[in-house]
Length: 212
Length: 212
Image (cartoon, one colour):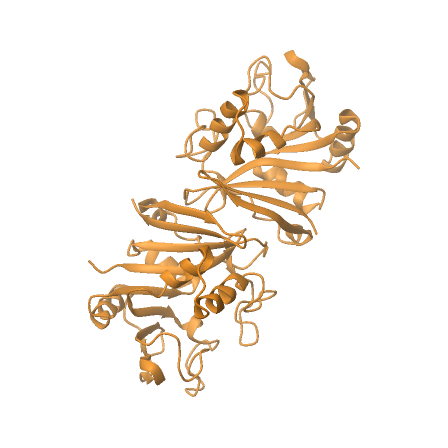
């Protein structure tokens, strides 16, 4: 059976996946820059993977792309705009050839036409229910797994619905103090999971949650 | 200079040091039994330490007692009663010979006479400010360090005041979902700290926070 998986979701020691006041010039909020402390391990792992290196961080990083046939993400992960689209020229943070190479479903209250990018990535903008979007993603994935890409609110939504099979968390050794907590608002959602792996590298701690 | 230290503070993967509804027959709240998943590592480490074994968990466990001359704890860590003392026969969770063997300052809005136990432990009940209690504890410690024993609210109080020098957290591989979060209500308090150690054993992940 194809699975619903979350990978490389990085949180601070105090549980935040982003700081306060996320916006276009600070997509991860106050005090959290992309590639800075919180995601430094990810940037390094992606470089090491491209260079053919192995190791704890690289191995987990690489698992995140294996056997994924479609991705679901929140609108805030696609871009910084809120409310009705002011500007449809925005095509995501990733340039003309995004690193997905499959169908990506963007959850939004404001649908817009699909966006076909180079390299096989197509962004679909949908206000369907999370359950219905998951069905569409499984169809698009054609037997492969579906990845919930983030951000925190979308992961929470699927956790609450009990729809996630595997959740790979990465704890980075820093404190953010305030912001968006990944494991918030999921009280009942967490009951169905157990920790299958907890491993520290020299940079971070990897945790793999799976169904009980 | 003697230090203010916190040791062996165990939290779940989602950051809780206790569940909801802490009470006499469930001092760690709903679904969290002493010695169960959350503190299993601690119980095992204390047995292993008594048996003279070594290892990551035992070594961290043992560090928590080294060079400590006095302890400060919250009233809820001393016992389950709330409000004015109904029953002064309660002498803590630890029996006639508590494992402190030094002065222990219990923060409470309801002072009562000190309690001299076997083995050198004396409980002092005080409604002094946290700063003043720390001064008294340093006097009692006579050159050694002072440990903030817990629970979460007291650790938060001293973190907010910027008075903690070292904080040893232990992340246990389970999700609690709701309850008392250790690293809550300490937004500014965390800014002065950095992660000096993050190490997984086969059971838990140890994190040592120190001042920047």
